[in-house]
Image (cartoon, rainbow, N blue to C red):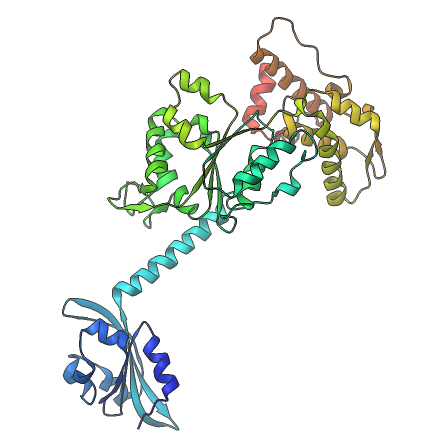
Length: 448
């Protein structure tokens, strides 16, 4: 005879799956609340009765007769689908009772769907470069004691709010660094940080990338569907870099999501809630885009609850030595060298205008250090020619576009002189400059 202790009964009472215990003749001795709720039966309808008399087509007696368990047997009764495991309970080679574990199909499917969603998230994070990866905090942001002091103090204050943030500034000033720092100091720091370059998403794919798509939404779609960026950022921060590049026809869809906090996957009729904080960034003048009819004014106000502008490096030259020493320290640690830099070289770097901002400064330092021997002291002569000679001479009357183009050519030509013009060298140059190989070739061809 099977007897269960009071402690065991409490455990079984608390389980989500339906539990039935019987004696060796399949007379029911115990049933838990989960099974009663699932079956709609009352305890007195089961206790003391043969199981197959109250649960038609029960196969527990077969499992007990054969002394072999039967796992996940599908059954449909009164329109309700379930999966039942039938297990003989044996002690000292003697059958002492039977156990039925009933799993409702809808509950089981929800668990399967949840696991599939987790796997899809893991797969996405594994494939997406830098997704959910943040490493910057305010105490690591360069310039706290220089030109960025007031900006960082403001950012610390608004980090704990839920309002959207718009970060503006030239390319290379560190907009994503500030965005990560805000995220890591916010109440969402334990949630994901999903960064997306809006200019890199083709207009035709914009909706499916941001909102995802349902199973079988279109020809060629993944059979399991796809999670969108808003879903991936749930409970965290979605960083919209180059937000000014979002096509006007799609801005209204983004605005609707931000206003209503709900998304609808492509190919689905169901709307789901989102809990995402938006941090947007751009190097464009959004006010000019609004005036030109290329950016919605209502969307601007929605994403710019807290507008922040990062000044270019040339306007905070006092921060340059801090960047230099930080980059040098990182290079020495990874290369196991002890390279130093002279005050004269630092002054040369401070006198340069840095149109590429912090990104360019780091590239120049890494480029310079790569050619130095251990214990070398960097002097102005070791710096790239366009740095040591000061800013290149600008053509009077040239447009800004022409001046920027000329600067790009000067930089690329200097790198080509140092590394050579082989394909491998060009790939390395493109990597160091943070541009694609195709962009590098365009600059080279324009200079011919």
